Amino acid sequence: MPAPGDVPSAILARLRPICRSLPETYEEPAWVGVRWRIRRRTIAHVYPVDPGRAPVRPGRPVTGATLMTFRVPADDLLGLTAGGFPYSRAGWGPNVATAVLGDHTDWTEIGELLTDSYCEMAPKFLIARLPD
Image (cartoon, rainbow, N blue to C red; front, side, top):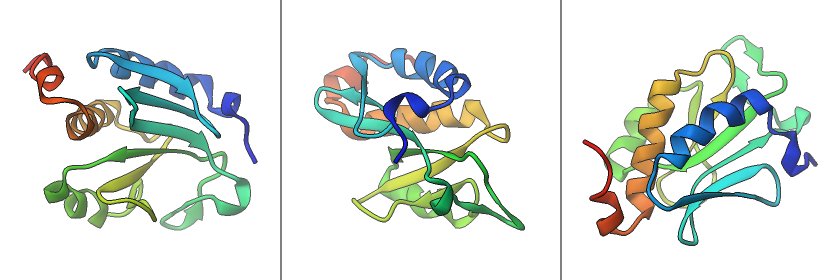
């Protein structure tokens, strides 16, 4: 099983500024990978995938895959995941999606998705502190 430090540093370098911009969000090691939380609620969890369980991009498997789980507003989940790669529904929890991160990643979209995930998990008074 991968260790917490196995998340590629380039991916962490892209995610950290996004997550740090969300009020009172903090980073911590998870049982595998790294997660960002508001209070005691996880807004994003990023981790390397075991090679035998790598997701498949249309036509080929994704090697060295890194996954991120995050919350999605219920009304947006089907629209986000219907298109397939790089998004899918997580096999657990309500309104949880996964994204395969890598060279193909649209980091602007990831920023928007993480902000939405934050809004699903944070108290309303903290959500009100977000810039428009």
